[in-house]
Length: 203
Image 1: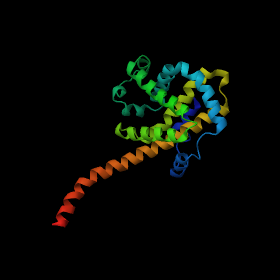
Image 2: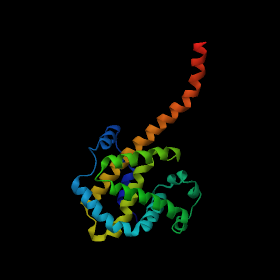
Image 3: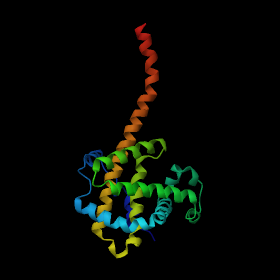
Image 4: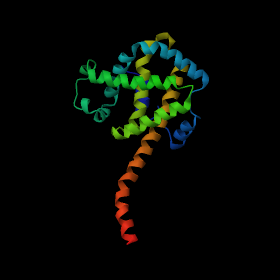
């Protein structure tokens, strides 16, 4: 049971990249090609009819393959019966929020600067959710596993590679946003301690 890509995410072979790769992604070098954008958009037309279903499957699978991810979600932290989550309104709502982000990402593929801004902001907000970057790639892997049965014969290795490229590009930007916000918060935390020293020096 399960999808082979889930295992790849756990081993760091899906979405986990070096700092240089992330920088390249932010610069657009690792963004999907025009052909990849076209087939991603075509597949999304089919996927969007089942976004609630995909969102739930994606997160139930995420908690099955990476139970440590539940620690990030206060509402689901102590849930042992994953089947119960399939009918959870809270999980459905969160799944829809994630699917909405994916939908916005697909819509912005022709305007990469807007996609970059969207992903950076999401990465910054995840800092405040205490959701570290190591989890981001898992979601992309589980999304791909969840949509394969929906797309059926339309699913190809070329389409899989295209979605992987998109998620790698987006997660690289999210990680950058998370790190930028983390650095900003450290600077803010340090600044009050610096001010008294400056006043004492001035005196």
